[in-house]
Amino acid sequence: MSTKTSGGHAMGIAEHTKTDLTRRLARIRGQVEGISRMVEEERYCPDILQQFAAVHSALRSAEKELLANHLEHCATRAISDGGDAADDVRREIVDLFHRFSR
Image (cartoon, rainbow, N blue to C red; front, side, top):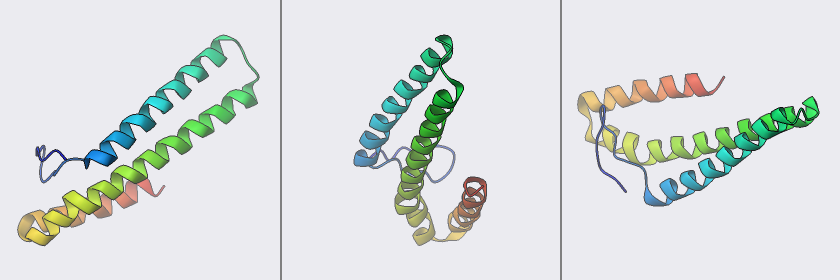
């Protein structure tokens, strides 16, 4: 896992999570390219829309995995360290849940 910090208290992405996210994003990239081909070929709109829904679902699943990584590593560490970093990460978690629960 990377321990490089950027913009605060980031601890990095666990290696297994990074590998899984990279694999998922490559699959999503392929799905998006497939949608582009479908549009160029003027395929049936509901078929294209179904592929959009699949991409949305795949992205939400990847988001969930990254959020779990953040909570398990970055946020847990910052909260256990206490102080201003703990207060900042608690506010950040509330903001994340508000943003992604829509």
